[in-house]
Image (cartoon, rainbow, N blue to C red; front, top):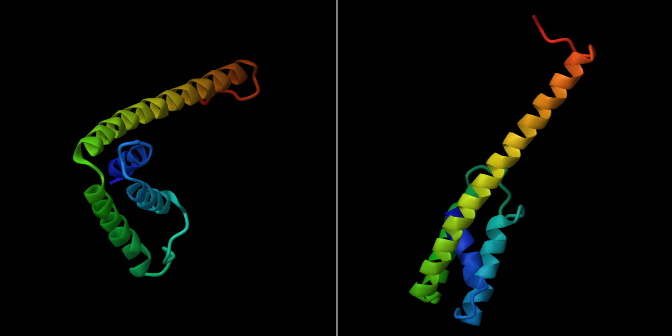
Length: 117
């Protein structure tokens, strides 16, 4: 569903999509990414029910308003975006691990934090 929301975001920015579909899609995308819900999540059952019902219904309604060719192109862009986001997350993780390892190796040689035996 997240990929479909990304695709709707790209569709909102496409000039071939009618204005009313853009407004409706912007509302659904904003609601999906917003931390504010119509029904707060801490209310049992109903809190998650609005996310499970409103967002998929909104996505289905918007998909009917957007031309199929445009939606297919936007889905391809969303897949590429997910790949790049995954690669960026992995790079940040590896960089943070290297910085942590480098810092701990330097401080252990200085005698401040001896390595466990």
